[in-house]
Image (cartoon, rainbow, N blue to C red; front, side, top):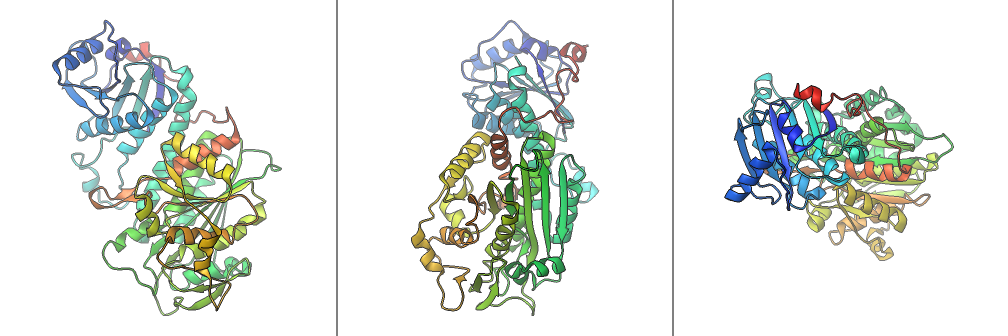
Length: 510
């Protein structure tokens, strides 16, 4: 999707040729003398339209408006969450239309948060999975979102919000990639295929990739990671991505993404209902891929390493058994009391591997526990960290990116549940505080650097009628990395065209 940003008044928007025009109207709208203002004023006066977020009024062939289809959308107070909600409703109103281009115009001045929310809202609402669908289904426009290929966002004054727009476009590209890979069925997203996807990212600016196979992982001594993979015919892969945005002397941020491409639970087999959703157990890995895609677009001045331990958790004759003891890369031994607690086993070796980069911070991202879903639902990701500064930075990034998280405790007493007579640590601690004890397990392997754990089990995908990956927490991670890189580090991408390269409003009206 090609996004552009330009300065447009309502009068200019009314005169711009476009198959579809979406006008975002906030509380306290002040009309001008143009045709769109007159349309909005009449609609408000009649009571057929309100400015509350998500309220809609559609028209076709409006008088003195060049665009064929016009959708008025209320955005409430025009805050980021309100704009995002409104844009989703507006895109839904265009579902089934033949429009492939959209002019999205703010009826009043828009701040950076509103512009970024609008950009992300359009991209997310227009996403449609199609990798494994037949051509006939791909063409079913009545059920699929509009196939927009070109979106122009118009605001009264574009320059103050241009950086926010660029960041929104960059994050949108990363979210889309994360959703695409997380949505793929396990036979179309094997560890080998994930490695290939990572190698494809190395074709982008400033990114390098290395993919290790079973022999290299065995040589390293990643016994916990190997143990999870040994029940599957699919070979494991350990993916190492590097983004070079700063001098080599600057310590990187390391992102560790859980890459269980399918999780049966192993010998501790999961219940059959909804087991198909365990293809989403590599959503942490997908979020790392998406974050690197966004980094290539935005080019911030920071070094980032991405680590993805990728494998399947299957129950064949060679699978690990409850009670088995394995030795991790750190040298710590682990008693596997539940083979369905496999994510922490692959992550612990990756966290130890991260030490070699002498990182400024390490953040692991994982669909780790059902307990976190019970605690926080699908609204906020769980955040665990013993480092207050790192936790505060991630909380702030989530708030700004509208990709929320919530900090949960890591008290030392919770580690008591992980004690065992037969190894250094058990991999589970019982049902009470399951999300916390899982984080306490990981903490044992992350003592050499500032560390945070994001449990995205409740936020990485939606079930039911809306089943599909969300792409979270790409927005949070990218926003955090941009903040660490400092101001003015996001560069224009090829798709986020500058005002000089974009066509002028006058030329488009002609």
